[in-house]
Length: 249
Image (tube, rainbow, N blue to C red; front, top):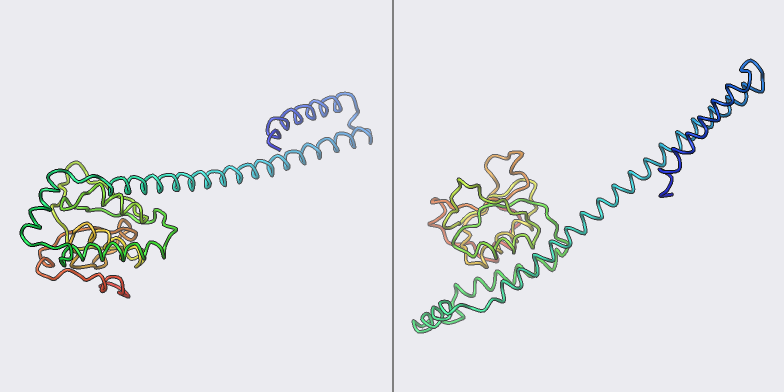
């Protein structure tokens, strides 16, 4: 079947030549001549229709192959992000990091401190939600990861749960911190929660999660990480309030 596009043009040329010979050799006024020319013409029309059907079949096959290729690319990049995230999370702490931890412990800090426990709680809740939603695909846009966290690791984490990062433009200034999430009307609730938990486990205090005030074509499938002076005096949202929420407003 794959050779048909190459064979059929030759067949068509042969039948065209046969028709020309028939027209020249046979008298069109004779019954035999008319029948022969008519049969050849009908056959050529049939071949043309068949070629159209075959071509449409090949187009469908090509479209299916394109879909499979896109899925393979999604799978490849998803697992590359997973590997990059795991490698990034397993980095050996720098001497400065080790010195800081020792200093904090010298101040009396414990690993059970509420601030550290909150990060771990967010991570555990995120892992549970990921296990319940294993087939993550790139569905939504997200923008606004601040400098207060390791942006590369946070962006890898967000991509790993199905977000596509919108980069900052050259003239834009990366915000130093964030405390709020705005989401579009077509973003599902589970994705909003996982985005919030990803930020919290990185040490970003999420104090508000709200829909965009004005839905537009550009934000209906997007999340914006933002900072607002209005929310800065609020207490951070708890992990339980995020996970168990039936809707944010």
